Image 1 (cartoon, rainbow, N blue to C red):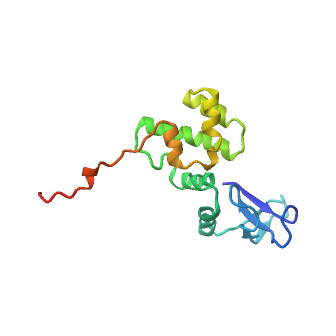
Image 2: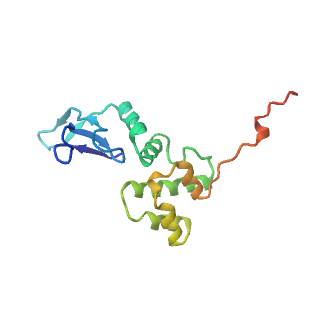
Image 3: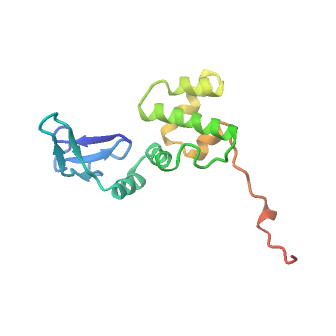
Length: 160
């Protein structure tokens, strides 16, 4: 996951320096700048952020695309799909389009069009708000409909 570090420039007055995961709400919603270490030989700089606090922050303040990325990192691109070829194909396609969207690429409609085989106008329409679409909405766009539970499945029969 990409993290933006906000220092003196670009921070509104009164806000401290902070670390903010990309695709989360703007300054003021980040963490205070953590302590960091630096190598005097090569100049490498690194810091440490509490992983659970970072995950919680993304769940609370992240955009839909950020929460889905975190879920993908934790459980994989096929996380909510059965183990079938079609499900894996759809999961991989959504992960591909998501990666382009997170990177801010203008190729999102083109890739979606290639994967779905739809006309340009439909690809542009379907991907216009890709970053805000839920996982279920994306699965539906790729033709995956979750199994609906029938009313009889919930019926507790009085007979064994």
